[in-house]
Length: 74
View 1 (cartoon, rainbow, N blue to C red):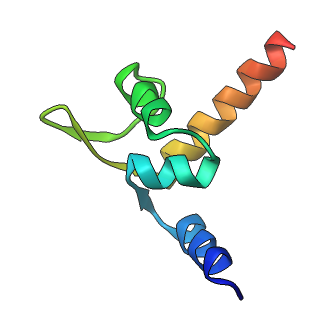
View 2 (view 1 turned 90 degrees about the vertical axis):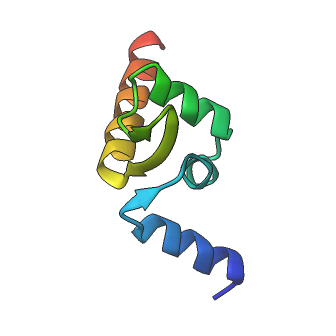
């Protein structure tokens, strides 16, 4: 198994993500993830305006909602 594949498998198995980790996993910019949190489209634990962590379940819900919205506009 390659180092990249091993890293990806560990990310997929994680229960919690930083914005940077989630962005890397779904091939987005960290700013796109942060914007989704601050616009209340993605649930996250935020302390003093700083995103601490995003649960895997919240990330999955957010991605499902994005996919549904994209297919509705197509």
